[in-house]
Length: 379
Ligand code: GMT
Image 1 (cartoon, rainbow, N blue to C red):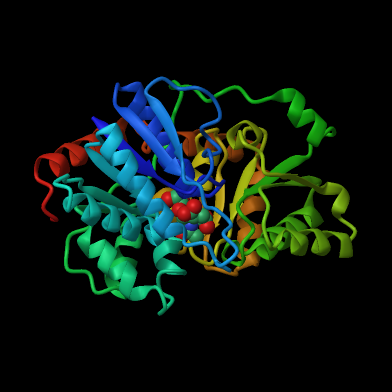
Image 2 (cartoon, rainbow, N blue to C red):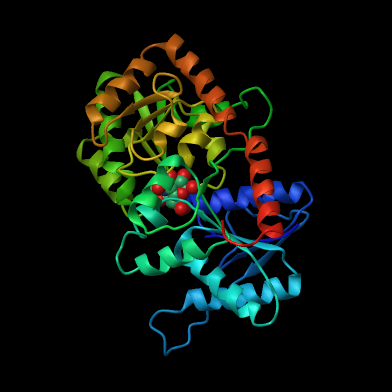
């Protein structure tokens, strides 16, 4: 099949999911065309069957804000027409679903039918989408998509609760590439450089937006550190990074804080961690937690949104109410202070991640693609 994938190219989970899905489809022989304003971060080398089409937004002085959606729609028309695409799969509703709809309508006037699938990822619904100024366009674009998927049951429910949806939404869970049955080997040299005295390592990966509650991450760390030697590894960057750094400086614990910034191969670094912290305010799925579990790292998280569909209480980690840092720190210590239990949870976290193996999810997407191409009317 000849498939166009529209996504954000940045470090966010939706871009990662879109890119990994495209790479896996290409390996199965599909022709994949990524369409975005920048090369997606996880698409950093040549892959057979994959092409990248850049959406160039000019800086014409008349516009204070460049009309990205229009430029994207024009690019989609061009790529669908000249690359003879069978299907568009857009990740994140804003503005990708409405741009795809516009391209579809333009192409229709030229006698070209192109179905599009919208995958909802989270903040497009839970935060941005609920903003009244976006609501009519999002509702319309979701309802007009030829198929809509959500990455968790929780996100499907949120979408149905907050928008006037008059069509079906299929849940296709996020996935992870599991390489073999055994836990991948961790980088012992890296671990030694971060924790030279065998300190336990807590890790957090995010875009450091307020919804991630980075302050809770450092509060949990500070509480654990009162009881035992440990390090906190922060991966990613964003608006609340300075809050974490300031918190640690004020408490004199900065020497145990390691901020790595935007690392591309997060799983390589996560492999040296003992625990992953995800205390988010809202989270449709929690791909970062799944990436941690896939390298055998148990998760201490909040119980919001789709996280309970990923992290199983008392098995792959522990879940607490949003903001309950006492409980999260207690749960973290119960694992870190008991080597046998920690080893068992590491194995179990890996076992849990295997349930989300891409090999299980890919055929579900392929089946949906086939159905939509053969019967494009919305369902
Ligand atoms: O985590 C973010 O804020 C980024 C955002 C995105 O779209 O890139 O992530 C959302 O999509 C991910 C992939 O489906 C999910 O794993 C994240 O849980 C979701 N984020 C939120 O719901 C806050």
